[in-house]
Length: 243
Image 1 (tube, rainbow, N blue to C red):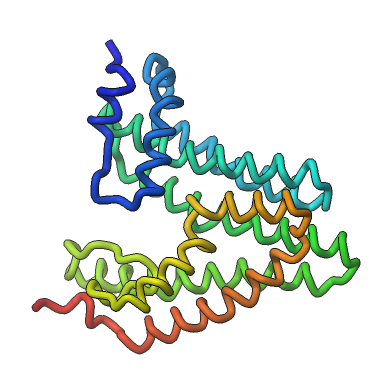
Image 2 (image 1 turned 90 degrees about the vertical axis):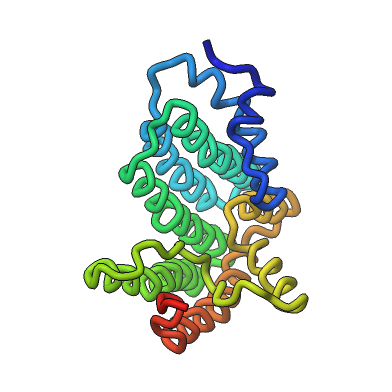
């Protein structure tokens, strides 16, 4: 017998997470509950969710108001599914390395392609190839940011050291941040966290400003991406050292 919504919320709640993540976790339970009655697995949900950002990216390319709003709402549903697979995995005890792998593909490969859709959207609006190049530039910057980070873990794994270290978020080099740092990280989170990204896209779509989005993100990732790459190269492996 599947637990009630209230019981599931208590079981799956993540008290130490940001309020936005807790909100999406609560919303995801309403979708996860009926799926718990079925043989559908967490990995199957994760696999299906890989395609939703690609559908959104495709709809964005049309430079059509209605399609853009629908694409933003698909992103919203995709974010909820990103929590649903975790709900199912935790309730059915289906957590696995493959599930984590699918999660990484979603965040680091599927989602960035939305920027290509935004680039084509702006191209169709302005009839200028520059915006397609900006879309490709943002995707490359996201991939490079991931590579400079992940290669450190590859080296650590190969050396069999530091395996107990928690994977730290992008740019989070210090645990104790100043108020200014917290404000900067909050602003970065608005544009990078998937729990906020769908809302940013929806606002751009509703106000018919989506053709500006890729230019904004190109500038944003030029600054943030360059900063992250510099920090990763400058800090080296200090965070893996004991003490």
